[in-house]
Length: 223
Image (cartoon, rainbow, N blue to C red; front, side):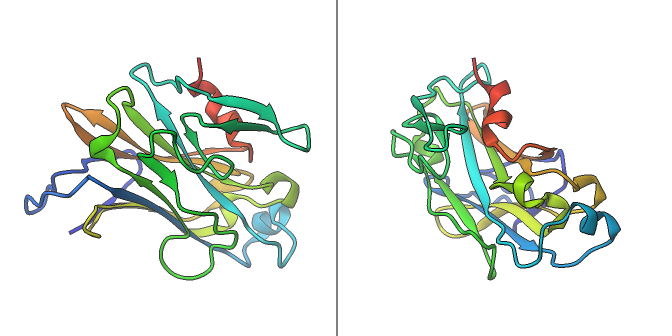
């Protein structure tokens, strides 16, 4: 049975605490989902976006070394607008670089609406095969152009991150819904998976950031 985490809680991904079930980490799906709140209180209307605007939440993963840093930034070059930086073949997985050079972690696609049930975006990780130099994976969600569109996590309901093993069994889930403390926050460090005594653990974080540019969230994780 899957464990529902609260902010700050940690579990062992391989071994269930209730029943002793052993999960298959040869391929783990990190699923993320959300619903958009179409109405709200005064603060949501004050900070909120125009009606009918499309919400594009992007899932991102940072692969960190033993020092808690992204060791390989790959190739970097400016995007066409001259304001954004594109990372290519790096230890950062996102919409412009969806597959890690190792082939052990990749983003399945970009859902631009959050419509429908189930996962809206998925990151697949072969945890059992991931090179030992990667000690932690940080999972981030950002609202694309959230600042320009006045979109923020205070307008998101039922946001979640979950881990599902190779047999399709849900291991754990961490959910949160927007409240006034999330108004103006356009990015979220949602959770992390990290090595511990030869195994993998998963921690619910839920740390919001005002920026809608994940590169700014990435900076503390770089050398």
